[in-house]
Length: 144
Image (cartoon, rainbow, N blue to C red; front, side):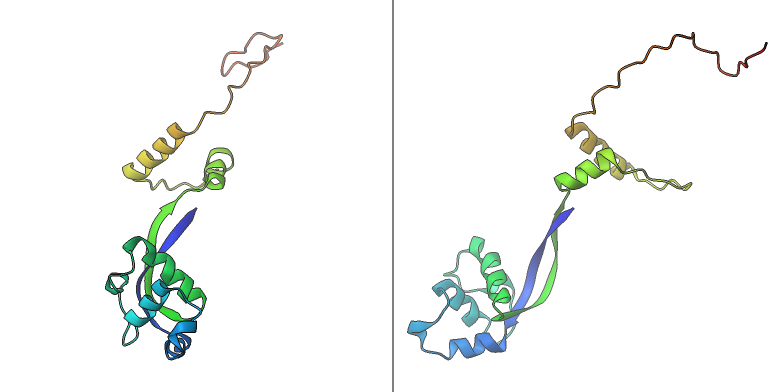
């Protein structure tokens, strides 16, 4: 499985505060990054509170980049979208073998699993092996 983390609140770090005090003509950040730093200069903010000059679609990437550089600190985040990777799908299809005696599965979980199974090709059909002996009825024993 893989997932994304959504930042819901962040504030400026000491390094970011120092950076804003430097000569603005030689700052090692882009103008949009500077707007993000200036927006959270006084207190922590939500991504929606970033200066309107920064496009909404670019804000999450800018926040992550600035956090990795140590210029802002993320104070609140939550899980966003979660998805099954190709490796996870292969594991469920080929290797997963649940065990136990207690069956606890909801209809929605079963529905999701069936949808998953319908998305993937079934394994090739096993070829039938013909036996030289006729089949023995169930429960029959070899009496001689």
